Length: 602
Image (cartoon, rainbow, N blue to C red):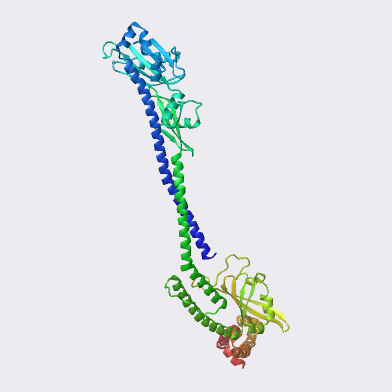
């Protein structure tokens, strides 16, 4: 892959990563801001709904506070004159005040008078039983200490939630003893919820608290609201956003879950803004990338490409005298051109020195009388001195090294077949590879020839082989071995004879007093033996001197081995001389003790 493609890939990957990071950051920042703005607006809409709901509750409380402390109301609880009801609580009063029912109770909570009104049909009717039970069961509505007190709030009935307000019935100056309480209420049904929602321009739905039939999102909101947060906002839907808030009763317990829902116009605007912003950024990035690639190509890639072409041309022609044209820019490419020219100059000098060294090595190989070649695991390398190989015999080379090294039993210790890590040339630093020596024979027209092969590890799976014809040396060693064997036979025979003679001599000495007549004969025998010792040493040393002289004249390894064998033979002769000395001592002893006899004999 060339640098242009690599550059395109790097720039593309970098820009894509930058674009991805930019999109993630801007999404988190821009969309996050729009989402926060949307949630704040949703919360404000929910707060407006609850403000209107509280205003409705306050209007009911205002009505009970207006009708409770009045003289005519105070009188009605005493005389029960229904003209008061007909005069003051006509259908218009219920409709204008949006009151569904009113109840007059005495101080013990017993209903004194009650009246209900259907706002949808405009018809009056009796008080429903559930409302009567509500009044009787909620002492909080009719048990107040002060004459100026009033209570308002929400209660949950089987028919649905209701907002109620209660105030004591006293005179207009709040004088006298309370005669009872005036309770008014309004049903918080779907129409009332929808009416308040329309005033806030949002869709509002009410659900009973903890109702199993409520939607899943409402139940989830109730769980969140139960943890103590005042309002829960759900923005998981991409098209609408919903807010949830509970309506608490007079006993400060939630009875309703109010859900407001609005279209996500702010979020959609944020997405559009992010899209325009991202598109602008992509266009700028593309323009920047094109400009960057163009400038890099003109200033870096094109000079490097031209440099690569010039270097390739020099490599193909193998002309180390050629040089690269050097630019005048003074940049890294120019420095590289100068360094390459310096390298070419150094290589040119090294090539000249290498040629001279190769010529010397070839001359040296031609002058060496031994065969030298590099041997690899798979066979013989083709670099060796051909002339010497011909002199040593191509047959020997072919029979020993013409096959793979795995077939030569003697070289297994040098390069074992299948070895994973054969020894490297020279071993570790500072060590010299050991030399492995073995001998082999070949058969040709001239008969059997003996050769010596020396192997030393010179590289990975490679050894240096040096072969030498040692036939003459082997023949000389064989001849010397025959001489040595013959001499050993002679020495052994003479030694045995001498041992027998000595034994006889000892017997004669031991029996001298017994066999006096044989004394002179034994003494003469000893004299003969001693003379034979002297003659035997001379007979052995004369041919040995001839052999040593021939070995000195021939020289080389063979002569050294001949001299070594001659030293062995000379040692044997020394042993004979020591035996002669011992025999001489015996003769002197006989002369000392038997000289008179010998002289008398003579």
